[in-house]
Length: 227
Image (cartoon, rainbow, N blue to C red; front, side):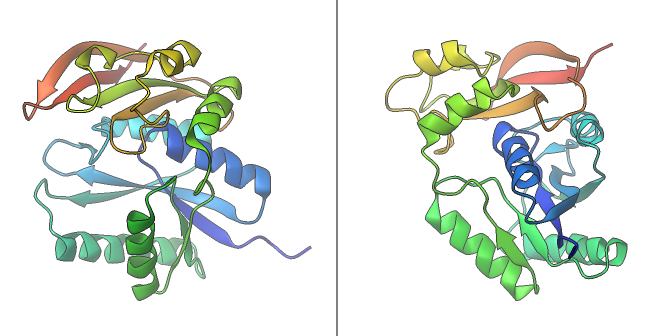
């Protein structure tokens, strides 16, 4: 049997990355050998979701995969980001000779996909998008019924009321979201922190902090590793 080609998965700590891992493992077209997280070096959190790095590490351990941590400054232009990515992908190739594929959990945004594809191609890598083009309303329900457990950790209050911060990503939430809000938050309405699912060997015990407002716009709920 021909071995499956190895691949990395961009890991934000949120539901889309987690479900992408589940789907890739089901399809068995590539062998996901590691996760890559972009970390804000100023606060040691995932650059988009704001998830603590120790939570990201715990998620990776629950997924049975090593975590590559790509650190960037809070104010990072494209040149800075590309240099950091090139260095991290080179690190991956030293660890897994021959690896040239990296998957992303993007769902709908064609401009983001095109940017990732061009960036990866310029570095000699192929970008994969196992969830792209999915019906996000149906996908959100599939995640919930499939056993994924996540909490809303960041809300863009210009698109969704701050009271949703900290809520469980479940069927009750999906029914409560306004019709203008994508059920997977694909337009940046919300981000999530995954605590359990079929991609993990065991659920994470996370302690929820108090909601806070960041940059006058984002309602964030901090999650820490519990006992």
